[in-house]
Amino acid sequence: MVEALSKKIQNQFFLQWNFSHKNISCFLPMVKNKEVNTFYLLEDLGKSNSLWVPVADFERGTMEHVSFKKNTRLMENRYGIPEPIERDNTINPIALDVIIIPLLAADSNGNRLGYGKGFYDRLLGNCSPEALRIGLSFFEPTEVLPNNEADEKLHFLVTPKRTISF
Image 1 (cartoon, one colour):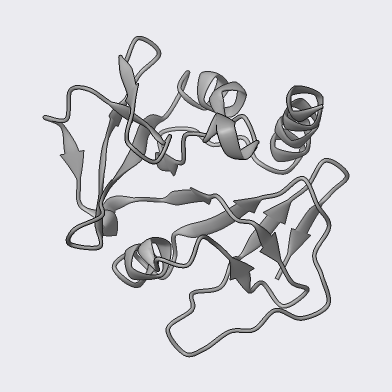
Image 2 (cartoon, rainbow, N blue to C red):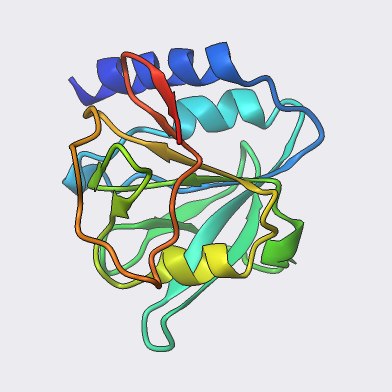
């Protein structure tokens, strides 16, 4: 089910965008949490873009982005998040053009619900205002989610059925 829905999300994504020569950040899926399998997106996006994946420092509450290529070796951290083993090539968040964001839910206003640690809110606050913020979800948006001033909104949400602009 996860694989079939992930492929539908990939199809919806490429109906909307055909990025080229961009710096794109994309999360790697936590298999145990049944997140959208982004490896399909990464394979296609990597043909004409520079790809970056997040690596979280849970002690400091920060996240850096390291280079990702087809042959990048990965290892799961203690939370089950795949991360590159080699981390010598990083990018300043201001240079990211597109950020593909994991979420548990999103609402009709572009608010998103993550895992509650604020990593993406802090990251997005350090990115260019022009950088596209794209959430991926197996589910359609809900009416309203709780949010506060520190929460950073999505520009788009891609589901298996459609792409929603906020």
